[in-house]
Amino acid sequence: MDPSKVPSPPERGSMQRIIIASVIFSLMGLAQGSERGLRFVGKFHIPGSPEVVVIAEGDFEPRGVGSYALRVYGGTSKKFPLDDFVAGVVRPRNGTVEAVRFDDIDDDNRPEIVVIIRSAGSGGYLSADAFRYRAGSLEFAASISGLAKGADPIQALRDKFKVPAERKSSITPEMLQPSDLSFFEFQTLIRAASAALFDQGPIYKCMTLR
Image (cartoon, rainbow, N blue to C red; front, side):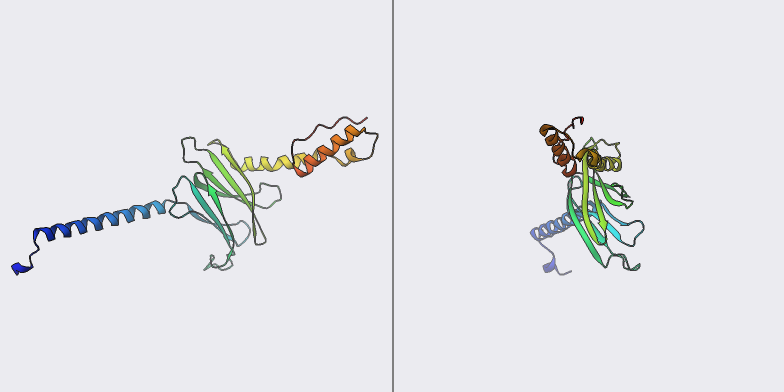
């Protein structure tokens, strides 16, 4: 070997620093890639229809907080079910996406899309977002949060939908028929009807009709 081509000690030190820096950057890239691989990404079929739902936590976000995207595709092609995007939404999350369910929560005999999230803290609290998908339209339906780790979020959502229905049923047509009500009693009934039908506050107790 030509002695003139042998690297001097300073040159060898520079080469070592370059190699070390390359290794560090490679390891950082692998670490970031493995972290991204931990995020929730799932593909699901809506029961009884060809549409495909994709749920994915946000890219480069921490696992414990951030956002998730819900996208619906037509699914008409079995070979390429994700080539016809229909609708989508991005929602915040306080925790990690744990599961996706299809359950009827508003008693209309059609399943809603329910995204269940578990908090990253020691309490493991549950939250859930429900969405309606009807005829190509995606609509946010309801959400619940702060549930105990062993609670049933589906039942909690169903209970939330029952409250407005019970309020509406508390005012009957017979109660609104003309009678010998006093002005105060009539005013009380009107307030109760408004609260029940429009969910604008507590329901007033209706006085017994004379």
